[in-house]
Image (cartoon, rainbow, N blue to C red; front, top):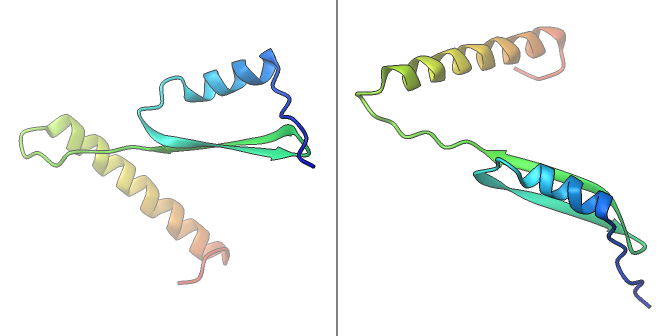
Amino acid sequence: MARPLKVDDVWLERIAGLLGGMEFGSLNIVVHEGQIVQVERTERKRYELSSGSSAGSASSARTAKSSRHAVKSLRESGSVPN
C-alpha cells in the first residue's frame, strides 16, 4: 500500500527556492517510502541568434571558449574519450 506523501514547510521552501528565477527547465522530485529524498533541478538557457547583439555574442563566445577548455582538460586527464 502506498504511503501518503509527507511534505513539510522546509521542503516547500526548498522547492520554491529551486523554482525561483528558473525561466526554462524542470524540477524532478524523488520520493522514497512517502518522503521526499532528493530534488533535481535542470535549467535550460536559450539564446537567440541575432547579428545586432554584440554583447550577447561576446558572452556566448566566452562561454564556448570556456567549455572547449574544460572538455580539453577532461580529455587530457583521461576522464573523457577523444
